[in-house]
Image (cartoon, rainbow over all chains, first blue to last red; front, side, top):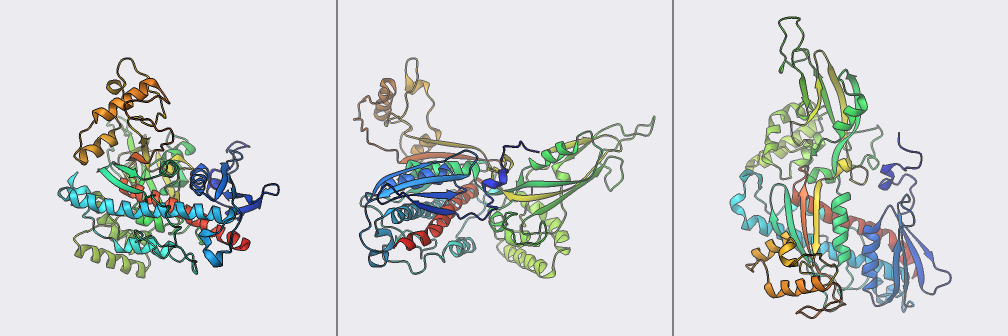
Length: 136
Length: 409
């Protein structure tokens, strides 16, 4: 019984059409640049990946946008220095090029989130230990 | 609430589940350094940390039944903001989604009753929610199963029958009921034994009131599959040896939420399917009532201008978590010099220099959070869930990008 224009709220999370999570389009007019489109993601990941990419000195440009409020997708445009060597030679996170720069940003964010995870577990244990009088 | 805290030790079952969920990625990864502080899923390769950079960390400042305060340090604003956004909108919880009305002769229309049922807070432990399936992810052939739905039933009739004689007073004049019957969340009962729910939740910590459900657990299990009953019994026995006698499971958080009021001979008979969801779909799935988020309490970064009459330090409230963190560290609540600098900055506005030199390139790296739980999850569970959701998001994007990145090489 929702309005004609309003999309199903479940479509925010539920991928009915099996659209791929990540798609990549090469920017034809700009060297070493392209746009990643993340399906069913929003500013949470868009801004996070953008900021991690911008910390990378091999990234020349990175920006993101949510093209339309009713389309649950985020586009991240990224330009990097030219690729230097292949992944098999110097490691995936060391290659140049927009794809490697993007995955490097994602992996760096994941590294920090995992650090937060173990840090929180430790802090929680410390808290329980130091507040043992309140334990059951 | 002294009995709320569970004696928290290492929880190998939980850690194992986490490692197993994400550990099998990036097989055959290339060179690069493994960071030492990564006990969880340690076989994941990480990009090297830039020189001089530090890994972010969390310190809990305060934790009670309803809320948690913590400080995140060495963290980028974008990461802190992602945490805030996920706390608000993407923590999975359980709420009633489908209501099948068998009989409704109350004065409320069906949609009204269904809406009220949907908003009931349903408590479920994090371990159960994590194993529970979203309805669209569940491989079950039927429209629901015990892995993706918790089924509640409510059958109330205000005529003294139906095993329900509560508050039924008959007028001596005409034989009708003289009072109304309040139908509350306490009248909602688990309809289908969800053995998986019982078994899964057995390893989790829970509120003391979860134990009240123990009495009915045996009844519930008796209808379940034998293996599952045995598993649940084993789990209960294992817990008993540790002195933790509990079966926590999805159930209404509080028993006195009024769903409707029945007059004489009115009835409400419904079946409810509670589903896993996130607050992006509907706010009823949100486990938080408030998320306080702040940084730079002294406004040294000049990100804002504080309006004031005489003295901004006296007139503006302090950041509570910041003050608590300083107190916990044995420091004075207020650092006069720092505050003066901040006050001067606040007075002069962005770009002005106080007593401390103003660095226009400085970035916030310390963030103060306070998360208030609605009660459906414990506050520390909410934060744990938030971090896992964020990590899973990044993991999925990372894994889906790998083929693209490899194709280019």
